[in-house]
Image 1: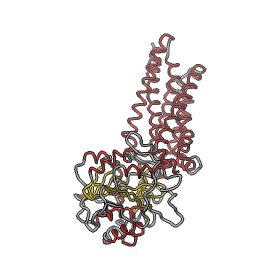
Image 2: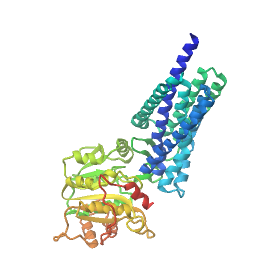
Image 3: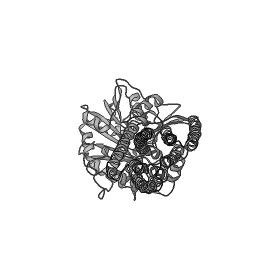
Image 4: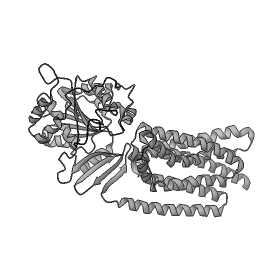
Length: 523
């Protein structure tokens, strides 16, 4: 009777172990995107690397697990296979940032860089976790005739655990806890699982060693968390559903970073000043409206960041109504708390996807600002001809669209710029290009901010494109709003008077928008 009861308890424990290991494996894969994002962005290459490495690891783990289970068919040995990745995962936050930065700064490139990091970080622990299911089948099967039923049940339970781990991590954990803390806990949880199995099999010595390792690692985690919280200049570091966010302050500036890109910066001496060169250049867009001296009535800003440009419009045009849209509610909260973005009847914050907002809005805007693009990660659905058509439907007569991208205008790396310009021109007859060249050592072949201003109507009587001199004169009619005339005239003078040759560039559509590959060509 006791033997039968022990066997029943062991069977239930195996199912619990398989469920939890499946959940931990998928939680680790979801967290992998956040582990890699600060160094490699959140591109399709990151996700492709993660998925392929985890699948490769599972293949190796299944093979090893089958062979090992036939040779050492004991719960104690399975516990060791679970404890080893537990140690690895628990220690991972202590070194993954440095490792990723070293690889990102090397010569691996945007494709191979995340693949190499994934292989180093996730191949071994994922392979060990892949051992669990075939091992559990070998331990739990009581007769050859029931092996299929047992295998099906255990793999079903493992898959349910994977679903639970995926949903819990993506829907809840990432928004509540720091990624490094979650990873630490996953590793410790594996050690606790291993210790529980050893105790159930009455391997008290091994269980004591495993629990001792757990205690030591927990102490290291607490020490590391205290050290991280004491980093000078870091006002905020947390993960949202969409970004790894950091707010870093120096003696004179405060900056917002999303993943591996600086999104916004303000001067501590004057938080309303346009501190970034590209936000200053963005002001030229207002000069390309039919009457630059007339204040815009409504402005839509898609991609808020710190809200720097939008709040300057709010300050200089007292009657303007601004809809500031960002998919990430935490970004909007950061903009308010750390970058002093207002929120009232004139400055309205919307936590929603920019394209969805356009589809649901019935308002018309004098200026639409598109600033949701990062240096190596671009939401493709905000780059297509169909998207720009939706933008055009929300433009008031004489309205303009100002889009900030990071690209090379000429040379071998111009593919992304060419595709963006061509796609804009497929919807808007007039597209003006303003490269934001910071120093005399830069050229149009270098990657930098480029402001593209698009309009449906021409500004001259014969609808001919305006010249550089015309734009500079129109900047004067802004009357010093947003930036002094001399500053804006400098940005206006960088306008390309000859339209770029985009003959071979692809037209981006909802059905074909290889923006990640286009960006990779420029890196």
